[in-house]
Length: 113
Picture 1 (tube, rainbow, N blue to C red):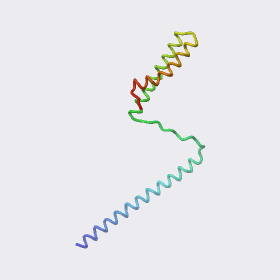
Picture 2: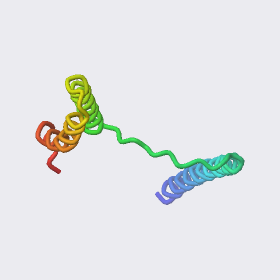
Picture 3: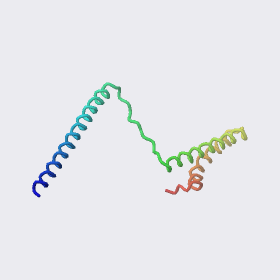
Picture 4: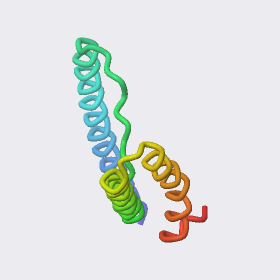
């Protein structure tokens, strides 16, 4: 019985040693890669960090809704520009549109948060 236990322990230790060697090799490879990457990045000029955009169904839906609102706003401005030649009327439509866009977005798209 003790010979069987010793054999299993030897197998376990051999497997652990093999896993440790693989892990050490992987970490050494990663360290070399980081070193190469660090040298390459040091040669490049400084650039601002990239700002990641939000992804997902909610973000995609919100972007689509914002696009619709922007297009409608521009259509209203174009119609006002074509209908009225007086600047105060055009300016009035612009100001009223700016004030009503948040209200309409809240009501139409249920953005109460």
